[in-house]
Length: 88
Image (cartoon, rainbow, N blue to C red; front, side):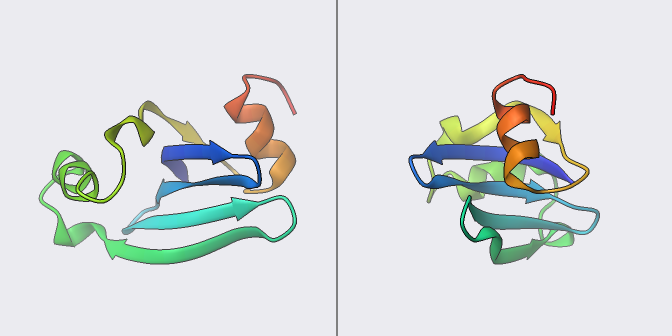
């Protein structure tokens, strides 16, 4: 799984994941962990760029990353380390 877009706030973060066949809009908090809010089939978009263009009608373009963050597991410590450039 790859994080392709993310915004942080004091309680955690929210953003987009890219999986094999879908994009996932998610929220992540330390207390509650990962919550998948909406899933979008990748086949509904002609390209990643089109997905970003559509989503930036609703979220800031600055949330999309230039390079995705590859995650093997989605827990608070792993996510914090990846976002802050530290080793787990």
